[in-house]
Length: 310
Length: 317
Image (cartoon, rainbow over all chains, first blue to last red; front, side, top):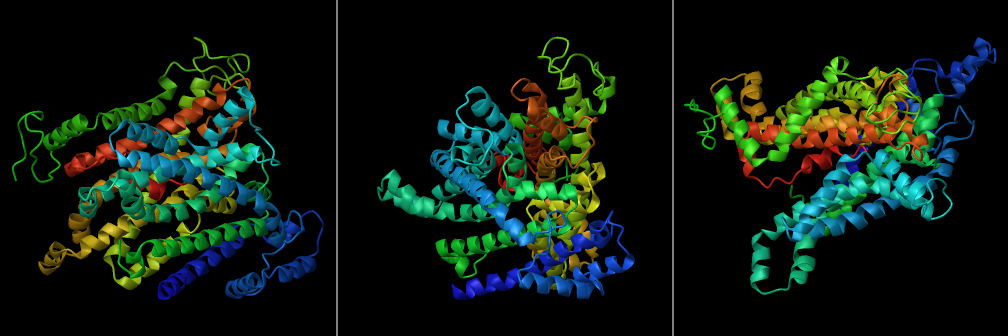
């Protein structure tokens, strides 16, 4: 197990390196000199521009600049926002709780709806439940989540007036955004779990278990689900990154603060350090989430641990 | 090597080795249509949708940018889907919006496929070292959730129509590379590839004649459903205001513009919203249908709709 974890960590290093390179390059691919953008309109002298360049770590070759950037990152310094002049780290930590709540809410919806739906459909493929679940899943995948958000607002906030459309205060305010964000993932999870269950139910050991006279519940809980759920776990990890990214549109629609709304606002202001900070942060969180998922997957499924490919 | 030359309906099941003769294709089309009516409907709808977008100026529609009446008119005989917040015809904007949105989706899918598939095939076919480099780069790109990568590209290039096409295309390159990589790698280990090498086939011929045909049905599914997902991603970017400039009709932008008027005039947002949903549905079902034409064996499989490619691609959410 330890070897497995170490191997995964080693494999993550080049990806992490690539992420930092790409994020670093954002600054250099953007047209315009950052120091001049910052000092625009203040009538700065070339000497002041050069001084700011130095302060921002923008002198020397691109490699030494990258080195400077990485050293700063290792010190936990994501730079200063052009727009607010606060450290990017402070800004991210202010926005983060809102997005975490939203993403977790979305995850709860995704798992809470997706797993039961997938089980119900997979136990009796072709049955009525399966058809209904398939319909829900197909629609869930096809409806753009930002449009679903709008529909939910229209129904529950405008027509029925039972849930608030805007705001962040109460748990109630989280319900609609979480459903909008999580529904599509619920559909994917349901779909995948159903297909896995169908496959598992056809395997010889399930036939033996059934022939022994085990009850349907025991078959499901002790034999089928354990096998079917392990690859679902992988998808949940993959989706978590997308939940963070999906939060962008959801936060804009519901007027919620959070990393996504922050990112969109800063892209409009061309506030490069903030953009770099958020992008780096989400990519790293996504990477870590996937590492954790690999570990959980290995815990659930010994075949993965021993390096059997699937 | 005898292809059925009799009428298509007469010999639908037993098919000759894949020779793309019209008769074979027709027979397969009939077979696929019978087994998968939903796919047939989707494929026909896709053709109609494309056609409507193409000939929009010839249709009896109002100018999508013209004010044709009061704002927020309810759907009526004169304006089938009502008018928007400014008094423009919603139906006309939805049809014209299809032009922009679908062109963006198709172009970016084509671009992503044209770059991603060769990369994946190369990586799968070449030595471990080369494939390692290519696939690690793809891993880095995949480490950014689709929308985030697209937003990075918007940041670099600035908002605009070209940006959206490029942003969506680049976000999908690693996905196509991934899809092409795995099967290529397993095909490479097959005996018939070694045999082809022994008889002196050049790598290009091996890839073209022996590797790509094996991938084709999977690629068709992925390309087709990718058009659905790129529609969604492009609409998301337009929705967030990073794409086309306001007066031009576009599904994402129009949807976003209608949000404020939701309480009084839901149809402004609903029309483009439904259009996006339907496009994604059509794209998914059409992929399966077309794939079963190139690979009839697919028809016998459990056709769980919107299947595993979804989990790979979906997710712009």
